[in-house]
Amino acid sequence: MANTSTLSKEERKKSKRAARKKAKAEKPKGPRDYARGSKKRKVKKMARGQSKR
Image (cartoon, rainbow, N blue to C red; front, side, top):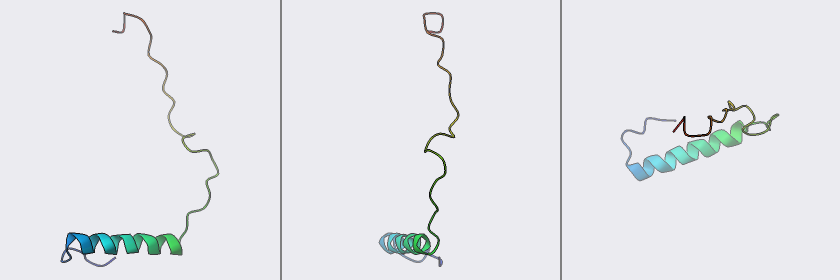
């Protein structure tokens, strides 16, 4: 992507969107081999009751 500091906000938006579209067409991402969110850290529930409040 070229230097966009001289462009106005709207033109910058257009060029960025075009660059994203071009990148997606050239290098599409492969399908996931794991479920979405399955690699997130699991959090244990905090102890219930008044001692924690």
